Length: 493
Image 1 (cartoon, one colour):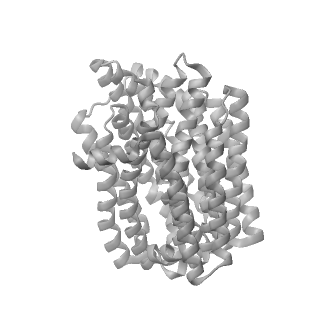
Image 2 (cartoon, rainbow, N blue to C red):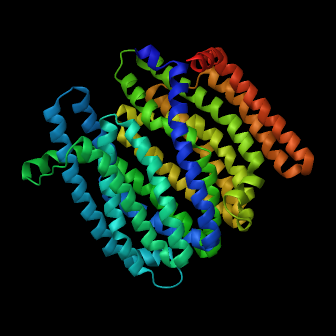
Image 3 (cartoon, one colour):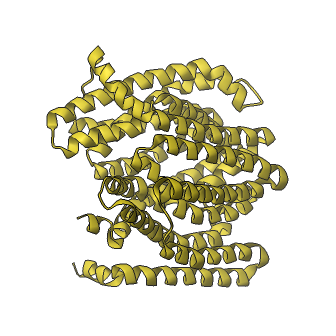
């Protein structure tokens, strides 16, 4: 069973499955962002990004890590088939989720004058942050119920929730922004959080009826679960804080700059990175199991390296095609006003190669339960990221932020590789190095193509590079998984 779960076919199957679900959600989200960008422009998009960054920072600071530790709490009861303990664990999580929801809401209200001061250089947005405080509470409740669904392996429900959420949000956002413009931003953010919470609660409560308790014994029992998430809370604060500092800095440079940066970041880091969505749902549980296995370091290395191989081979052709197509995709998905961010996006795509390699490695401390190492790595990366982005923007503008994001990814990969080698004995396989040496130069050649050629030569050269990358990846995956035979069997069935 362990061998089957760690072979290339299994990894390819589940990477494609969860990446496909994420892709559907992203496609609907693209339509929404396109219309919102047309209705609000870069300044409105920047305002949305600033509000989202602020409330995410408050949420990450007050949720006590339940979205992580609760999954482990539920999974233990679920795997053992102990229904009584499962019901008790769910009641425990819901009780603590409600407490963190109230805590987050009150903290957001209390900090609203400071959030306004730290975020904006114009106007008084204190009332806006007060009105957004219920969003923090809704996020905490949604996180608790999502953890319950993850812990009880309701992956289909989570996929359906994701699709329903983006579709419903599309029909809510467009009318409000069309009628009221930027004045509708705060109410819309509240409605979007409410929709997601209601959908998640609807699925979760149907499977597990709602029960909570605030007895002293239950609250004390929950302290152990909360303690597991403290390091992850701190890491979340650092990550959200880094994002908050970057966006606030860019906002002070120009209200439209942060909107452009946000559009570029979303398209490259989030859209282009949808293949990585399988990490949390499939790879992380497998890696956690391996860490408890008697196979030791060789099995650990094999599991991590196979995930890197499949991720790198899958994402590389997509990145080349994405980079080449950006001059068309950017105005199509947003508007022509966002073209100044093109240079940033093209160089940021290179960071995705490094992410395909470093992300599986970064899960090692989590799987080992080494929260201290995880926090250390995240903290150093966040500090370096902020420093690089601020420095990059001051010297080369928006394109400099893309260079900074890529440089930070390279630094993170080098840091993780060295630390994990000495801490856990992990090292890259020859196969990973081989595939990286083949695919990354194709990506670099594509980037050079973007600013050295134009017209027909650009498109012909770009398509040839994308085809070359795709052929290489498909040949390797076919050799490892008998891909064509599997596809033929599926078609016949």
